[in-house]
Image 1 (cartoon, rainbow, N blue to C red):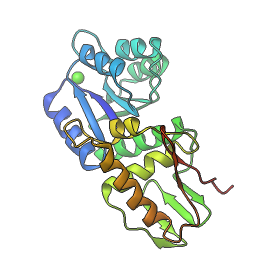
Image 2: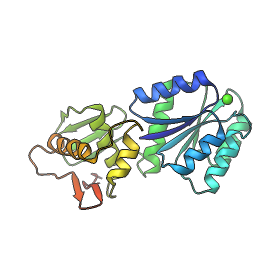
Image 3: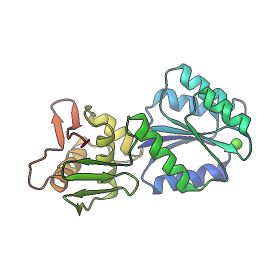
Length: 226
Ligand code: CA
């Protein structure tokens, strides 16, 4: 998942960016609202993390600008302890949730994951598709109760497809949301990953969890158990 991080404090920004990278996110970061606004207009993000206290344009104005331009990705704000006015203003401006500084990385990651799932209409942190079970918080999939060994990249790929289940996800979208900018973006590499993922998720070839939509991309096709 690709995140936009806007925080003017260099140390906090670098720490948070590194922590998010270690948790499998792709992160574009900016030190000021103007740069953040530019990124938010140009690229498609799964969520943004915005510090409220930014120089020149503050976080609340940035959120208002993004929302007025129909940028609807979930926004988590970083705010100072006890500053309830700021939290209310941020939520009213279109933010979805907040964490109070000093925060724990685990809390930021859990909130971002929950916001992204909820934005996709998924309130639960685990889903069952027949014999296939996914636990988003543990980042684990099982097939008929047996754990499926996935690399970090394979997990990111299947997580993205499941969150967008039923929709065609293009190769370009997958590349944009799963790879850091300097990464190898060859679409043949993606095809190899999808093939490997299919073998792991569906070794008997009875489920067909990932459908190829010719000329368009991939679609996760399994129906969630009610
Ligand atoms: Ca700040």
